[in-house]
Image (tube, rainbow, N blue to C red; front, side, top):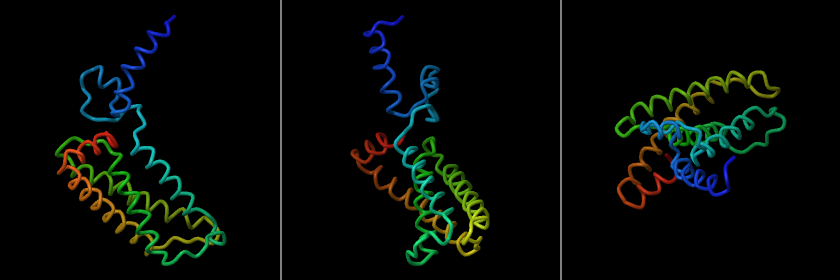
Length: 168
């Protein structure tokens, strides 16, 4: 049985690892280059909550959805935000941003296709090629915005600290 001081010491050693978002097992093995791990990072939490909101919003019966302006602009913005958050949440190695872009776009465009197809089963909703195109363009723009914001933040020490503390 552990004493309170032993438990506190163990938790104290683990907390910085979890906060940085590194896998505890990878850290113990000395291979903490990627940050897939048990830690929930801020980026991951934001992504999960946002994705749930998009799923719910796109699967509400059509009669329950209030008119909120141009449908294509809503799709563009929603999937742009989703792409930004996916890129933020994906673990990457320095210099491998092209792989991050490929995975992000593949995931978001794949989800947009599934999302549009499943809407045909929702009363008052339909599958629309125009909505899918707006989703895909939004994903490209959201990913572009992510890389621009990251490049701007990397130019300053404060920005680098912000990236480190909020991401990996």
